[in-house]
Amino acid sequence: MKICFYAPVEVLQRPFGSGVYVRELLKALLSIDKSNCYIIWYGCMLKPPPCIASLNIHSGNAERVSVKVTRFPTRLFHHPKFRLLLVQFNRLPIADIMFGRPTVYFSPFYPFLPFMSGELVLTIYDLTPLTHPHCHLPNTINVTRITMRWARRAKRLLTFSQAVKDQLVELFRFPSERIIVTPLAPAKHFKPQPKGFVESVMRKYGLTEKFVLYVGVVEPRKNLNVFLRAFARLRGELSHRFVIAGSLGWYSDSVLTEIEKLGLQSRVTMVGYVPDDDLPALYCGADAFVYPSLAEGFGLPVIEAMACGTPVLCSNAPALQEVAGDAALTIDPHDEDAWTYALKELLTNEELRSELSGKGIERAKRFSWEQTALKTLRAFEDAALNASH
Image (tube, rainbow, N blue to C red):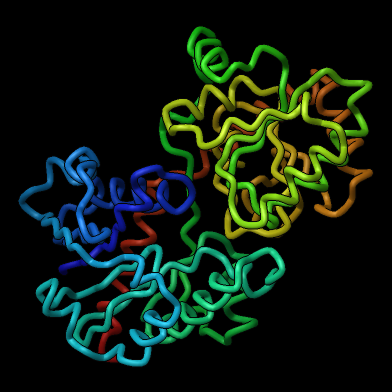
């Protein structure tokens, strides 16, 4: 079987979320799958960036892995009107000609190019642009709707949680058997770190006090304003800082405004995007990790924090409950009183932190990229087997 794996360079340059998924899944697939051939499509902007050679994901697999780099105008590819055009003319042999008629096309991030032969496997991260439209840009909502039109042509759909699978069945009437749940996992370097390394990373980011950590893009769905209000109530009782590690996303001004409104400028530190190599130490340096998100497709930072032994306090959104199990404190994302109480309890109760740390480490062991890759490979095989149905 020949598999075309779309790995857009843009998400691999500064990986978080989708970029981590593409990178870790591809590495795991090439490690476990010794029989199939892969074409890795590093789609990129008009001029390929110099980082492609340094990605090194496919090294050591030259006999069954080929790489294709196209100067495809990615911004055009992302434009909703162009994507709609691709859907309307989805049965043209464009991808067949580009990639030599593979058995399976796998798009782990975007809708795909028109094709005639082969079968499509498509990843659906979440449906929050449709279930929580007030948290997203209009463009994102439109692109999600277009993606769902591609999904009807896909032989198999991948999701990261049973919660999203249930939504696909309920809202779009997709047959359950076409949807395979492939949970994400912490990369292997997410584990308790040596004290010296943690301290050096803390110095790098100027973190000299005890702190509570959030990792992720700053955008409305992450519900940081509710947590900030809970955090502000405890400013006289706790000395912790709140550290936000992530880029500023859409509608992030409301978070900055809330920080100022609550007078938390001296208690909140925004360190921006943190490279993957520093993240485990950042998790390990925190007294607690918080993730108050309204809704998720999975919630990768939660399992990363658990793998590092950091006590987790997160919302009880369905996907996060799947991930956390009983190894975290889970709370209604809208209940400020509950967040205030739980945060105080967690930061003042050393026994509770120790218990959640141990439970989190054990919980994280249930998730692995090898298992994710095996389930994904099964989806490829099912798609190829059912090609004529």
